[in-house]
Image (cartoon, rainbow, N blue to C red):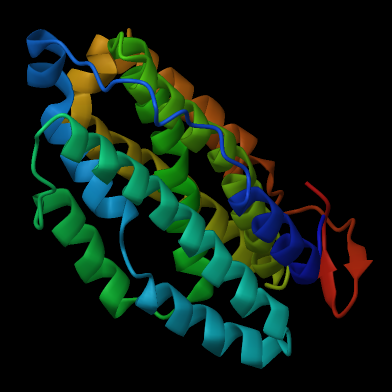
Length: 252
């Protein structure tokens, strides 16, 4: 498990890595455009959030636990997400398609984010959405023959691995700070929330998931696996803790 300061160093270094060759052409067939465009525009919009509500929640939390590096780590995490949005936006520009300013799924998520000041629920939501993003971008990559778009997806997929680990470690800290009863209640809520988010994202982007080789059953199996690999690793009855600085946490 890394400290917040270590995460700051990681994000700074990772933001300097360039994995996309922008000199190659942006090619997309009419059939691909018909299948992926709406989802591509929706995810581009979602990735460009300014993150002010997450920063607000993380600032309150970081002050409470006296960890100023955590705020910086979250800000760099958001910056990396915005990089994804900018790359997707540049691709849309290159193929002559607009960047949309409103989409129902994004609007719903923004309303929920606005009302949420809990670091715990923020962290859980990000884990669930980032897990669906892994399947989405792999599906998008498999659904196109455009090498530029494939490289954009690969760059995002590489980043998402550490994004989930960053949030997973924080959720572990928050989870094991609870008493036994609260841990049990939270654990089952986490799993149901994860499943509900998975279904919602499928409904919104099933054309891309299907084009990438995933029917609903296959998609759901993958999401259940990701749920078990993230929130499923938390053990409500586990009393084995590792003390890390000021917090009792359990290594994942």
